[in-house]
Length: 143
Image (cartoon, rainbow, N blue to C red; front, side, top):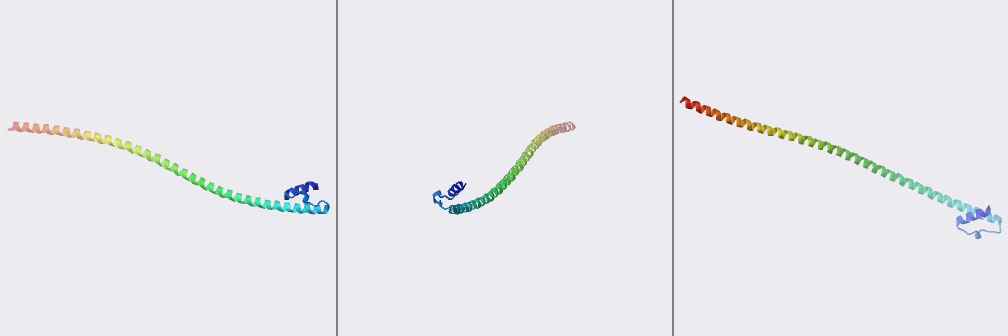
């Protein structure tokens, strides 16, 4: 087991097994213990770095998520405004079409009134002409 630990800690610390004292078992234990402590410190340092990187990544994610929600809200608001504008545009188109139909009907009525006025004027002219003719006839007969 101690050979496995020695290989592990030696690899972890980047040292060769030849640098470990071979003659003294107590020295070898102290060396392995020192390697173990160095490895633990290295792992703790890596853990703290990863923990900090994770914290920064979470903060960045939260900022990006807030930006996403803000952009989504702006998009939703824009889409709602676009739908409102489209509905208003459709209402205005209908209103214009209704008014164009009313204008067409009024134009027809005005044309019919013009024709009626012309007919009345023609009839009045004819009646005046007949009246004048009758008056002239009566005057001629009375003389």
